[in-house]
Image (cartoon, rainbow, N blue to C red):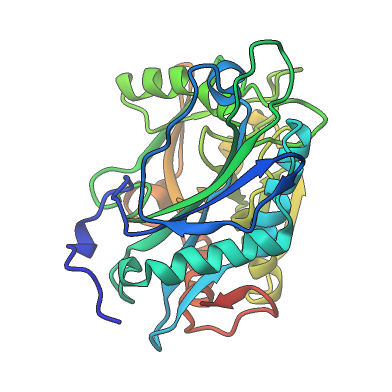
Amino acid sequence: MAKKDIDWSNLSFGYQKTDYRYVSYFKDGKWDDGALTTDENIVLNECAGVLQYAQTVFEGLKAYTTSDGRTVVFRPDLNAERLIQSAERLMIPPVSKEQFLDAVKKVVKANEDFVPPYGSGATLYVRPYIFGSNAVIGVKPADEYQFRILCTPVGPYFKGGVKPITIRVCDYDRAAPHGTGHIKAGLNYAMSLYPIVEAHKEGYDENMYLDAATRTYVEETGGANFLFVTKDGKVVTPKSNSILPSITRRSLVQVAREYLGLEAEERPIALEEVKDFAECGLCGTAAVISPVGKIVDHGKEICFPSGMSEMGPVTKKLYETLTGIQMGTIKAPEGWIVEI
């Protein structure tokens, strides 16, 4: 299939309309079979549950063109499981794992000419989401919902080559519900908008959120998980019940252990420890893994020389191995790659 005439190498991480999207409706206690549509507009009642009480959840995954020309998606089964968990926590009737995977395959296949070519540095970002759609004025769950998937070709989340990523230690809480795991809910992400705009005004790329109870342990940023490398080459990631159970982070930890033979652990990481690490990266579906050059804790700078101009050696190996798996140049663990 011929690709669209798009300047793939200069894409930003932004929305671009594609030809098809998927929609399924929940009514009278069940989801319908769902279908593709060319209409990108959504018409809602002014009192729709999503507008009044932000009853919505979303996911994010990517489709790639492999080195041998196949179109694939990366570990969509884990996105399905995470969406189901998020939906149940917000009293949204979850779609089945089978419907989720079928819908992802259909929408990617229908927009296959928007999947960037191999080697372009771009990908097709896939955004499944569910929201309450009928009128709700009392504080209660909606009765009707829509499950939709849109997709858009995107470039890197953090554009490299201009300046290193800089992060400030944030005074605000991440606003994720503690003890339940992170929920990808619109309300929770909305709570991070004020801090990120504030950070950008001060010249920072992201915020480092600390645990709300003691404000001494590293949690995550507004849109990615942290991954650190110790001076002796160990991979360390924060452990907390209130951060996103990142699929990319979990995959990188497995890659570190099974492909690179590195020691890797998930544990609470005190902010005080960060100055002693050799490398720092931000990882997630959008970011993959991007090197951090500097963290500023209320005027006190923590610099990572390896991240000021390029990736550190361990971060680079992790990035190259994971993207190699995604692009088909390195053999993937069983079940990680789903061909469209």
